[in-house]
Length: 299
Image 1: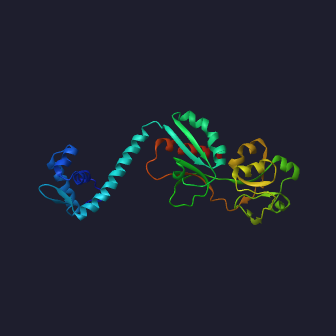
Image 2 (image 1 turned 45 degrees about the horizontal axis):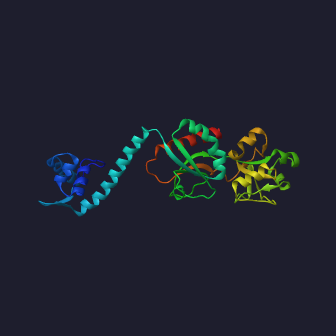
Image 3 (image 1 turned 90 degrees about the vertical axis):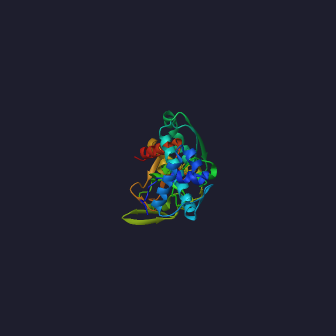
């Protein structure tokens, strides 16, 4: 058996298999027939088996040759893909880029980044699909998706670009009217807004405290949930990104900042790609930019 990873003779072998003769293969490769024949025989010697049954008119693949051709074709495809990826690195990113994300993700994360992204990459036109349904980007015709939370589907090609800092928050008007709880035990006297399956709320600061939110209103829609918190309807558990500007302006107040919220450490921000083939330049620069943006807002 020959050296593992030696590609010598593979191109000649595959071309002979496709052309059906050494003469035709030599013409395609712009080589002499003797050179092609010599390289294929050297490959057979290295592999320790015959790849062709030779006759005066036509060559035919042996059983071993047919099996080997399947693998060689895949290798050639990967080589072409690698060469294409290197060519892409030298090209300026351009074209239409379709991005799928949640409604909050679009309005609070992607849209605020557009001006700077556009300044860097003027030849990329973005189309944003905003929908809270968690679907694979290929199913909605997207080049890339931005997802928040967990990606527990092993068949998805996902890259983590940042963590998610969950906090308790309430509007300044709510705090002015009802006061701010000083410990998780005080939450029993407040309106707490549950979201989807984020119940119970579990806190830890030395001790572990469990609170079951009870309220007159609930929702499983991100923008509606954020509107309830900003509207002063109660205390909510949100991604800090969702209320970042309001926290900075004082319109929203963080509640129980010294208590750790349990069960949120696995939450993160992800980019999901349609497949694991070579990433087009427009997608690559967008993913890198969003990772850079996430690092900046999380700092």
